[in-house]
Image 1 (cartoon, rainbow, N blue to C red):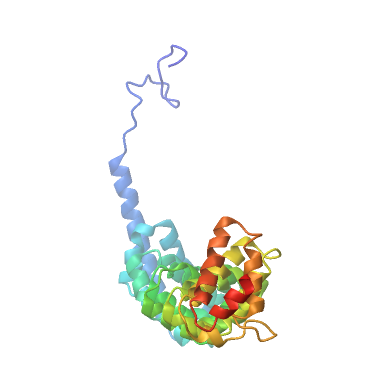
Image 2: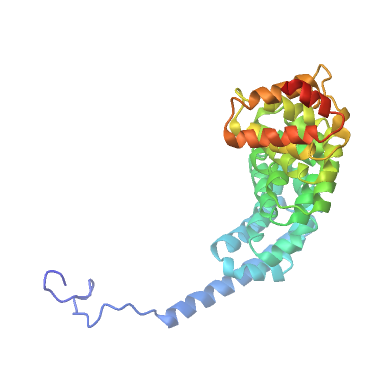
Length: 340
């Protein structure tokens, strides 16, 4: 039209009366009907292959590939997979055959479950039965298995109760920290979710010691610090964190201000400030190898020296720590002595 010529059909050359495109509803309906029948046939075949006895691994792998294809390519038909009971069957398959199944097949099951988890109702079906089974798959030898178990667990992390369940499973945090695919994301769960006070206390009791141990792994330090900082916001957790030897780790980071990342020192300052905000068990706890406590002249002097070399925002956090220490009757005399 820009060159003055009337628009024509590129195939017939007939002049077009309009450039408005109209959907061919008849053809579209026929295609959708064909897809629907095809999905139903595939779903029926998947069910038959999964419930067949004895298990035929090749058939189950093809069946799981079909579930993944339906879920990914035709997500509007995920409800057919769910209504056929396949989500429950896949969870049972993972549970009943976890010892006999090869890591490749477990990976296929987890891949299909992860894709179906995008369907909210299917996710709710999985929530109860997948935790321990999924975490067990972290020791699998297949990268594909570990990849999809991580993706599946992350898909559930918007559910607070499930996050608690994941991190509370026996040995879960240790397995999570040992996997390169997992550590960055999964260790961060306690640090990035919003927890109720009861959840914070339960998680602190179950995982504080492990989080402190994980800090020895450089790649886990950020996640561990964020988790400790999150848990420290509950006053009742101060004693739990002190008993887990969190203060020596946090103090060491704080006093090495120049050789660690600013994010690490900021998290350490916040966590220490939270712990010492009320008199408590921290007053008697050693924070370094020489047995110094938070209110000792050595530690207080180091904190005061930091005030002159850090930013104004960092100064506020250090002052909070000093205020918490000064609020303790045990520490008042040491604060005055160091300041003089």
